[in-house]
Length: 553
Ligand code: 9MR
Image (cartoon, rainbow, N blue to C red; front, side, top):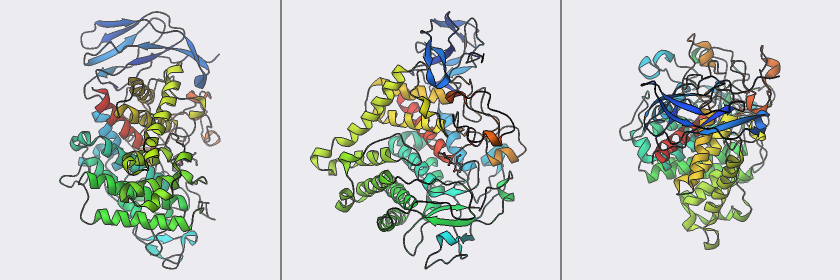
C-alpha cells in the first residue's frame, strides 16, 4: 500500500503573521495532541488536539487538521506529535511575508531578457545579458503592409515567460495586470518595499519599476501600421539548456491575434489608470499607454476572432484561447474605467458576464475589478453588480474551504498544469472580499491557500524556490539548470501537482504518486509540474503583500 502522507507534520514553512489563522496538516493515523515547541527555549508552548480524520478527494486519502492560531508570540517553532515526524521549523513574525514578497518580485528581475545581472543585484546568480531582441525577424505569419516577412524589428526587454526564453503577450498581460493590481490595492506596502533592482527611478516603487520592464516590451509588440499586436516573440523551437547569453537562435515576431490585442488594450489602460491615480506616470507615458490601448481595441473590433494557431515551423508555447468573450469584456471594462466613454460600456453585456478565477485564458474577474472601480459611472441598476459578482465567487471558494478535509478550497479539478498559480489566484479572489471588509472566513481561506503553496500539503514541500526548509531543488528553469550553482534561482513558485502529468513520457524518472494533489516531480525534466512562470509568480506577489497587510491587523 502507498505510504500514509504527510510523512512529517505539514505546515506553512515560512510562517505566519501573529494574528493569522494557523493550521497544520496531519496523517489520519495521528490521534494524540500536537505540541508546539519553541526552538529558542526548547519548551512546549502550546498543545492542541487534532480534528477528525476525513477523506480528501484530491489525495485519495484521509487527513486531519490541527488549529494552532492561539499561538501569537513571535518566535521560531516546530510541531511534534506521536506517530509522525516533527514538522519543519516555521515562524510567527510581524513581517512574515516581507522577504518572500521581495524575492517574488526579484524573480521577475532574474527572468529579464536583454540585460546583464550583476552580483550586486543577483548575488551568486549573476549572469551575462541574453536575447538583445533588437533585430527580431518578422515571421511569415506576422507579415503585413508596413512590415514584410523577414524585415527586422526591435523589441528588446521584457521577461522570459517561464523556464523557456520566449516572450508571449497573452501571458505577459495577466502577469503585469496582477502586479498593477497589487500596486493599486496596497500602495503603502509597495512604497517601502525595496527589492534591489538593476535600475531605479526616484519616487518609483520597485514593483512599478520592475513591471515597466515588461510593460514597455509589450508596447513594442504593437504594429505601428495598424495597431494589431503580435502574439509572441519566440524562437522557432525551444532553446536547449543553456544560459541566456548562449541562446542565440533567431527570434521571430509571430502572428497577430485578437487575444494579444485585447489583453494589451486592457493592460495598457489599467497601467494608465493605476499609475495616473498614484502620480507615477513618466513624461508622456499616460498618453502613450492610452493610445496603444485604443488602437489595439480598434484592431480587435475589426479582427474579433483571430485565434492563435501555431504557424508552420514554430513549436514554442501556444497560449491559444478560442473563447474571447472575457478578453473582450476585460478590454472594454478597462477602457471604460480609464476614459468613461460610452462606446466601451456599450460593448459590455454585464448581466451576462460571468466570473471565474483568473488565469492566462480567463480574465473575467479582472473585468469585474475594473468595473468595481468605475461603478459610479454605470447605470444605477448595475452599480452593485461588480461587488456582487466578486463576492459571489469568494463565497463559493470559502464554502469549498470550509467543507475541505485538508482545509483548502482546491478541488480535484484544480490540480492541473500550474495548480499553484491557480491556488494563488483563488486566494487573490478571496482577498478582494477581505480587503473590502468581507468576512474573516475569506481571509482565512486565502491564508490556507498560501499555506498550501508554502508547505501545508501532503508532499511536505514548500513550492517556492529558496523558501522553506524543504523546497523545490530542480525547477524546470533554464538558468537554474545551466548556471552550475546547486541552489535554484530563488523566489519562484513552481507549477505544482498536475494530474495530467503531461511530461511523464519525457522524464527519465517516474512521478512517485499519481493522485491529483500528489502528482509532482521535483526534477528539471518536469515542465508540466515543476516549471516556473511569470503568471504564477504575479499572484504570489499579490497574495504575500495582501496577507502581510491584511493579516497583520
Ligand atoms: O501555463 C500553461 C498551461 O496552462 C498550458 O496547459 C500549457 C500547455 O499549453 O502551457 C503552459 O504555459 C507554458 C507556455 O506554453 C510556454 N512557457 C512555459 C509555460 C508554463 O509551463
